Length: 333
Ligand code: ADP
Image (tube, rainbow, N blue to C red; front, side, top):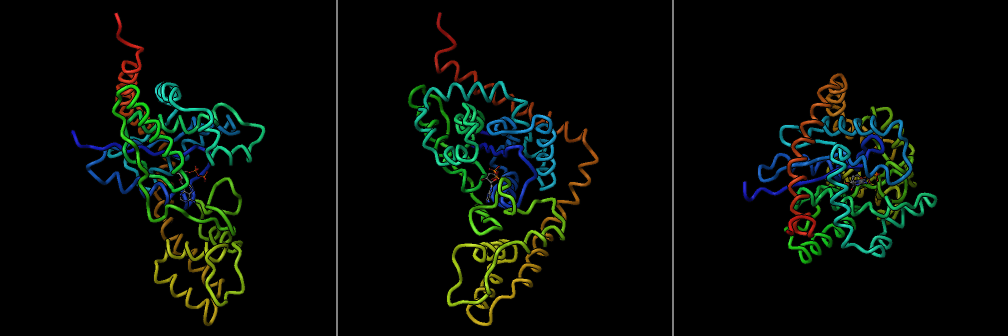
């Protein structure tokens, strides 16, 4: 058991999973759960959902939708502890507080992710939002995780987690590993619009895992293109994004074929989009079938969450006890 490494990953409960989440995060999660060298913790970060405006009437059900997405993508509860962050809220937020003693306000305010959210929600620049990366560091470090399957956009937050681990180890003699990102081939899935990454907060940018073939076709039909022909293949914008999706779902050769067409006879985007929609749906169909089965078993899902939380709690509690002792809260006379 000595050399077993731990893995933590999670996603906020803010909606259904999309292809970016699937390729950038879930694929990495699946890869690691099949590796016997790892002990796995996958959570739904429902506390993180509260850092930006959210609907308290739907938070709990949205969190369960994410669990359904996880399980239908292939996370297996006997290999991976699947749980809700809020079921261990007292432990995760307690560690967040201890870790926050080694983080400056300025460091958090300068993070690009924080600045983006400030722009997006100028009326909601809360302490919870500022603390987002510290809570994420607590999520990771409470299990002493060394690997975190996540998209490239989370790199600044992982850097914060590494800094915190270093500072805690230096100041208090803890033994936190410096967590690194476990990247996948789809670590950056572009938007269907002409800029940025696929994101659930940008309408028109995403395809959800639950989309049927017609919906996928409709979403792709709205993706911007050009005349289909030119002297050089675009390296940014709508066409470049479509070609990246072609590569991710239909392979490199297919992409090369279209690139050649672009500088010769021209690409017919109608055909490209139909073929791409079919390729995406081929990947999603088995996930959707499994989801329909799981939707009929709410008790099973609750049991998975309970078992996952029980398993996670044992380790989380141990870390908290260690940190309290090392930081001087326990012991003495
Ligand atoms: P969103 O931007 O849709 O709100 P989140 O920020 O909740 O997504 O991200 C959840 C996980 O999915 C993170 O690990 C993130 O890195 C990954 N992810 C999100 N969007 C993409 C994308 N377009 N490409 C690759 N990974 C992504």
